[in-house]
Length: 101
Figure 1 (tube, rainbow, N blue to C red):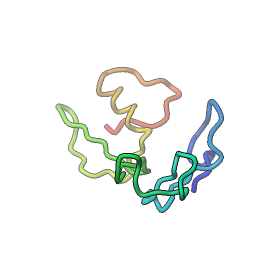
Figure 2: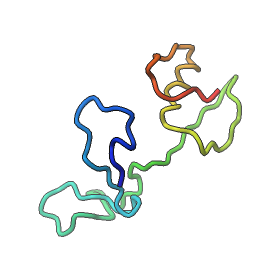
Figure 3: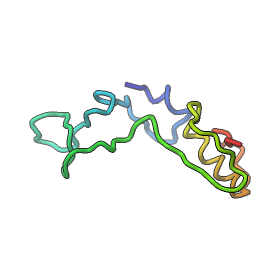
Figure 4: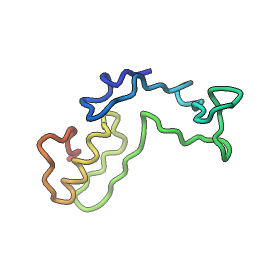
């Protein structure tokens, strides 16, 4: 479980009280009323192994982009500044994160 104030630098509306990853995302909470359980391994179309998680993938390739390999310190907030830099667009002063190169 995570408290929003431990995850987000700021909030513009009302954040959730708590962010829960049941079974480290091995389960998912049921979004329907009247189910026999409040957690499930499937969604309405079958097994669901594509839940949102704290780990992801970011791939970039092209001229001027160095080959980093795996970067364990990459933060999702670094993706937008990296893309803006690649496009030659200045990033807003209040944008969190930093370009990768």
